Image (cartoon, rainbow, N blue to C red):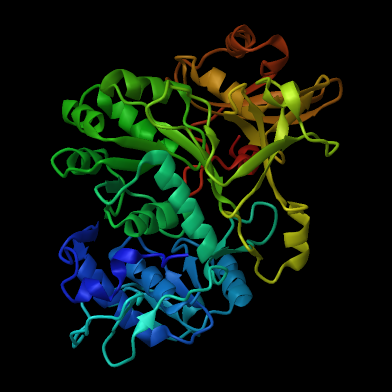
Length: 510
């Protein structure tokens, strides 16, 4: 396997192919490939030999340099969400036992990190000497005051340890190998025709797979450019995709919803989106009405893909095909995917491709994680042989496309003898003009087993749509047994940093 970053070898420091090409821009900071190689190489020399390092993952160039340096040094990095609470932070540090924390010089760290040595990430390290032309096959950098730093050749060596959200207990550390990262990024490159000519624009958090691995490491592996907005704004998207020459946009549904809201009054935004080569949404399903509003205003369809921390990317809609809102596409190259019924039987043949029968998604391939850190029992329980149990429920269409209907734990509703996915009801409700946001859950019912509950944020709080009207709307679009039996109205849905609705918090919100 080649190095993760072919564009960051020592030739970047010695006048190799276009060393002055921009690699990343984040807020006020810009680094060329030569500059990134120098900064990351110098830091890699300082942390070499450390068992693990934590990275204070702010949306900044310092985070990108810290993670690249860790990968160059062969030291697993543990990205830390700066908004993590005291108890969760203590759990992550105790579980991963990092030897140091990497942070920007101006970052204020919480008291929970006081016991760790701090290493400041410098974007322009002083006194980095010139580097001799490397021998053939060398893939390292020559940092100041130390020997060459070469990326490790072991594809199975841990690269990142990313902690899950901990919705069913304390967060688990997902160990991601160099093999998994390279395989997933290369599969996406094949599906999306992603090349060094692309300029990616996004404003995603850098402590998560979507923003860090896809959004930072993806462009750097291709030798292209990434522009991180620092904080999301419609104005920033319009600027970087328009006059800035951006070709790709990554976002989550909350961002695309705000973009869709602004399109009617911002012709510059519509032109910028229309000029982009690829618009990608992930981390949660993009509602149908936002798909439609963006397509109507720009002529561009938003591509959805499906992945998770343990699997990286599994499927994607292929650009250039017919619009397929509601589907996350077909499996990527190298990824095997199947649906499994509750009794453990595989949904094979016509039943597995009828677009109606719900099963749990299981996947296998080189994109899978290596295991949960310090949790061999949890790792074993997560697999069915060599198939990873995702916990996501889906149906498959005749062409193999996957349509997610929710999580097994929170989104599979068993009502009146039917297995119903919350996601399809949510999309149907979002087609009603009186609804701005919605989440669907199940709650115990003495007759049905579970009844369907819709948590609705109305478009007009003073005139919310009636419960019976919404029930009839869903029954007409889907079928009567999928209609909500209870409607509860909210001012807003509880969400996490990636825009996912926190369904377990809904009873408290109501």
